[in-house]
Image (cartoon, rainbow, N blue to C red; front, side):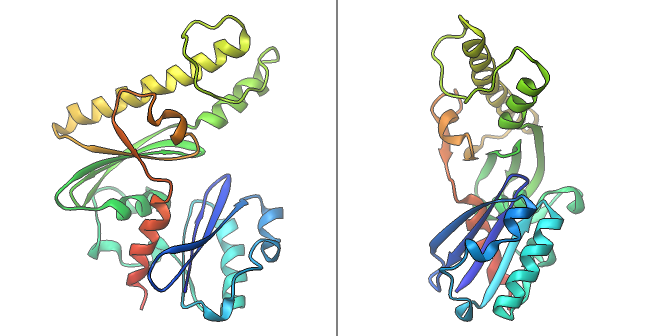
Length: 246
């Protein structure tokens, strides 16, 4: 059995994977330190004595440190962070290795295919685009996250209420809420299509587009770009990378 995890700025996803490399349990926990310090409350159903490997990707070193200490104590196994592994055998990275989030590398590993090109669009705390040409990770784009941008707007503008983003059919808002929803929904839809088009123009290549993360369901059928939804792309990348642990 394998424990795999993705520690993001907002949420931490921990998965239990069986010997057939299939996800059998998922745990979603806030990445806030006060929640991570109570992992026993969330991971009661894991039989730690059966764990053979542990692998995480993380963009929050302080949180990973806590998780690593907890799991190593529970399992007596080393808890690896993705970048500690020799990824060169499964992925060529054409950018500064130190400056790429390990979650984005896990996404790239998941769909790495020397015969295809991919753009991975991930709605997280930031909205990221990652470009894969064959097995080569070429870099990407980081734009403001939708949820964080919505919160910042309502926090900084006293007359803007907190809203939940949802699909909206009309562009012109008739009140503050619908105007904000329109701006974010159609604004991000346009941002996505425009960035994908610019990537194609710059590389002069065609791409399959994979969409994942918090708002992926909302935008999948609302953009002009054809995209395939894959909510477990990061964990699937960790599953492939876990084979490097001997």
